[in-house]
Length: 156
Image 1: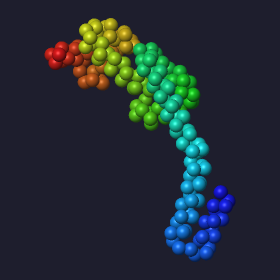
Image 2 (image 1 turned 45 degrees about the vertical axis):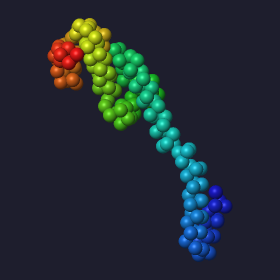
Image 3 (image 1 turned 180 degrees about the vertical axis):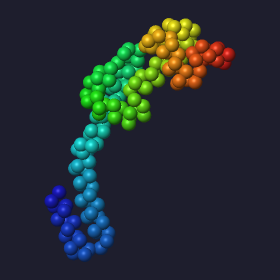
Image 4 (image 1 turned 60 degrees about the vertical axis):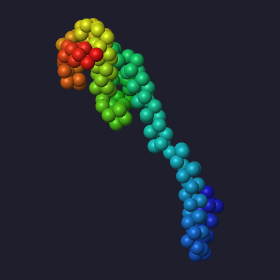
């Protein structure tokens, strides 16, 4: 690096052409970028944080019907609870709890279309009871589970 800096300084001091100065500057900056960008903690941290959040998302996909604590998800991601909450929302766009509810509702819609009863769907997707399920379903889908079944039956 020292020789590149000295070469850059010599080109500038000798008042060489603008092209020669640009080339020397380009060589120096290219070296700095190659040397330090790949080892940048922020780049490494960003990649590892994304990977950690993906691990938590994969776990949520596999266990959407289970009661999963924030501590569990943070431990899977290898992050503190606070950092996990902040980074999860930034990467995914919603909190981990909302994301899990979205996964549950998506699965519930599939099961309802397949003809399962609302009570069985509520239990199978991890809701406490049919009322709890109905409230979340209507909030996310815009209609009750029964209306959704009727609507999809008409379309089919």
